[in-house]
Image 1 (cartoon, rainbow, N blue to C red):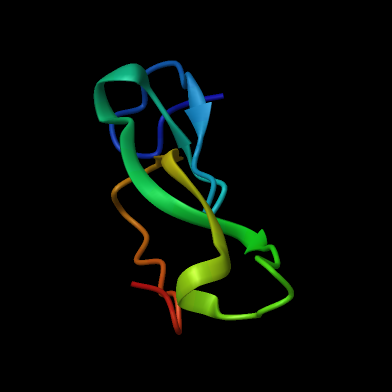
Image 2: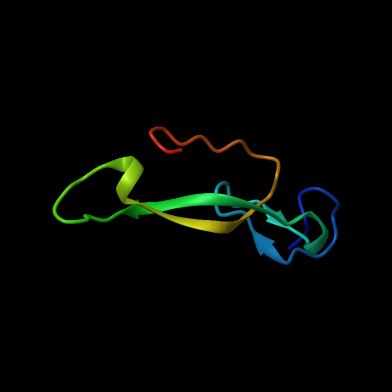
Length: 68
């Protein structure tokens, strides 16, 4: 598989859009994976489970409503 940005051999897939990227163009982005309760209280801001360094191609523009 080839990198979408430079046509070199891809090393990873973007978690947000699925584009293939090589080692040179891999970026990181926060990725919300879900929500968990804390003491029985639900709040997007307080209970979001986030992966801080998910693979991102740098080309797509992920949008997350209700996250900060």
